Image 1 (cartoon, rainbow, N blue to C red):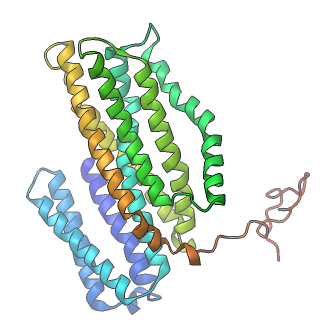
Image 2 (image 1 turned 90 degrees about the horizontal axis):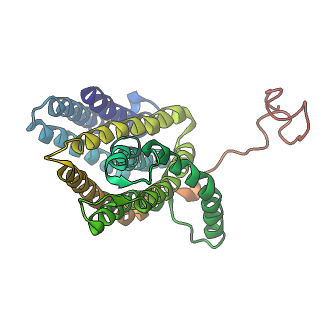
Image 3 (image 1 turned 60 degrees about the vertical axis):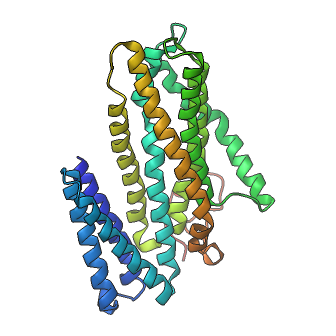
Length: 333
């Protein structure tokens, strides 16, 4: 599975960027500059082959994949300086957001695996089944979604709303902090003592607020940044990133699966893994926030035009039936 996802993911990333960099920017593959296009194809091929070989166990091939990726990025940078094309820049920013989302989902999806097992084995649940705590995220979503909607609107009205890349950075930081809070809580009472259940509520709270900073924001960004010709391809890439995040989540969960020697050793192993991924997530989130101004600049929001919402379906402005929008989905002339 890792080989398939790695190869397909690398090929998908290369293909999407090739479309906007060479086909759309130059009105056809045949008009693209031969030198940069050939170098791009070579870098993509080397990267995909290197990924496949590395996943199959050849560690040295990681450097081959990295070399291909560096060549691919170098061609993209060269094209950004030699050819002004806003759609290409927007797709580059979208690909950046998609890659960042993999990190978030890899940690967020521990809820259904290692975190649920940790709750069952090492948390003082007061007799409540560990599976019941899976509903905490849904409850937080219902309670906090309106709050976040009003928050973004209020900040936008004051012209201080964080950019989409900034929100992604905040999301990754929060998912990492959730694990660090749980680790701190478990170690503060002692590894050999059941962890107070309040820390399970806290980790789900931080993960949910992170999800609200990333998931709806990301879906909106994919729609806004995608040219109509490849909108479905970009949305597919977004959900492919979610699938990839779930694969990585399985690897993280597997790392926590060893029971060690006795209950205490098993709990400490889980806490060590959570501490490691938590700190990595915080570091990645900070890095995303640092580069967010550059990514926002690539979005070219000043020239981005949203589709109108009142001229596409007959009956769009009507309230009552049967002329409500979509009942007779004929386009207006």
